[in-house]
Length: 173
Image (cartoon, rainbow, N blue to C red; front, side, top):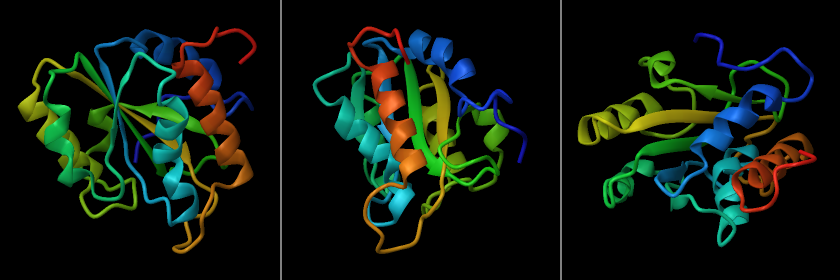
């Protein structure tokens, strides 16, 4: 898999992410969270969505571990951009966050879900050809089935992402 857009700084990728997420933070953006809350860090996407409820201009959609079952809800009202958020193992330190373009996903499955993210992205691109689509990946530490809660580094990154995407002032992140 190609290296995601990120930095080599020990800041978990936030130096690069901050301006990109600020640009996407608008009422026309849909945050589509994907993840299984019963598999440890795989629940990072839904955890971020829960933290953002009532605190963001973004539209929120919880895809859980079967995003194909709710993908049709992403189509109306038509978003300007879709930010897919998922936990994945892409070879970085736990909690590292990176934006990956749909082209970089290719046919590979970078998440743990039945429907590959590339198939989900293809559906969204065909249905919404003028919509910008980005994948925000959070590097996992532990995705063992039956493990509830996030690891410390992933939980820390989810809190930082929540602050970046919320109404709150963007300083000190």
